[in-house]
Amino acid sequence: MNEKDLIKRAKKGDVEAFEKLFARFERDIYTLAYRFVGNKEDAEDVLQNVALKMWEHLKGFKGKSSLWTWLYRITVNESMRMLRHRKSTYSLPRYLSTPSPDIHLEIEDLLMRLPDRERAVILLRDVYNYTFEEIADMIGTSPGNVRVILHRARKHLKAMWVRGKKA
Image (cartoon, rainbow, N blue to C red; front, side):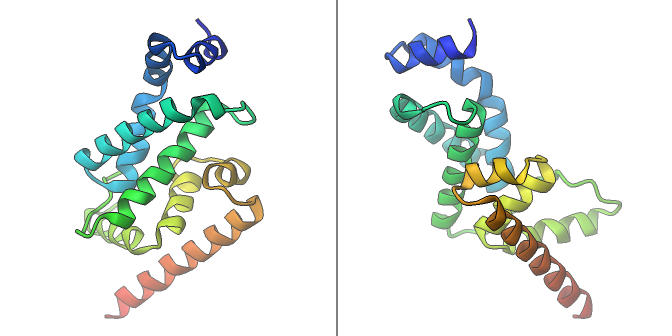
């Protein structure tokens, strides 16, 4: 069954259609959440929250963007919400390919020090290769503002890197 048919059936309350639909994106949602929150337990919580939000709000999905983009926006928002409410320290998983494990750890640490929105834009643009328009749709802003946030995030990363090297 194609995605549009599953969406129609799920909107009408068909649990089986919803489960099939969610299963198509579950691994990707988990991976994105994990890259934001940095640990399995929190990523699983985000995944559950996304499933719940999808079930509760699917009737409002208008199809202006792809279902994938809509779910990624929910995932980013849920991940950022979790990070705002979590008080303990955390680290990103090892997704960057760097020549040195030490540099890799430094980059992870620097990314985690960025404000949530800047980290989200860096991940979505530089790791997932989304366009500015797609990112804007996911985080609820304009493509121009995404460019500004990305520029600011890279500037912050560079400044933190330079400060760390001088210490």
